[in-house]
Image 1: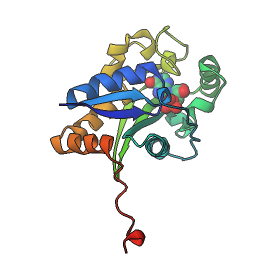
Image 2: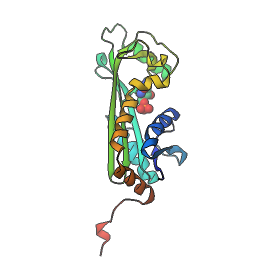
Image 3: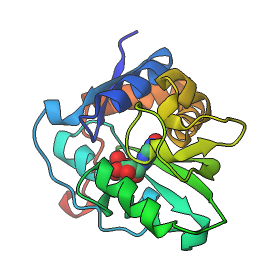
Image 4: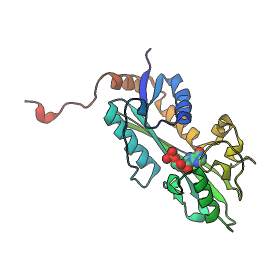
Length: 214
Ligand code: IMP
């Protein structure tokens, strides 16, 4: 059986590898959208799922293929849920974001925080969504060299190491993105869904424009 192609609204290799390995057994092949052309999508929504939907719809419209997008962030209890959907914008780079968070948390005793990730798949007139959450504690100093973003400051519940002190596969046992990916994979694990996605690979499923029927 041929695989149904799904384009990912990102060129991030780690995301591509993780999604492709989980979706491949379902008969799906995940391709990096930017390998097909360039498209800029502004993330103007106030929710992760809203921004993921914007990106997935835009890439679906641009390529005509089923399109997958994600959006994620860190929510800190003592900061009222900030930085949330603005997590990527709190500094120019990861070092700047870590410095911002350490400063914002200086003297705070409540170090509770969670990572959240939403994934959206858009194909034809159907959309599938999934969100994963990972709770943990923020450290007072960065620890570890791995991962990205706020990883050196975050210890997931049940662990003593930060995400940055773990290998990628260990992080995936806890991570918000891995949970959302698995949940979405469960929702797609149906022969009718695969058939639908294969059909979307072959024909534009826009439907008939009733105005044009004589
Ligand atoms: P985006 O979903 O790729 O736009 O990422 C949003 C921002 O949230 C990133 O730039 C990171 O700062 C932060 N973030 C999201 N997921 C993670 C993670 O797994 N580890 C560390 N930081 C993360």
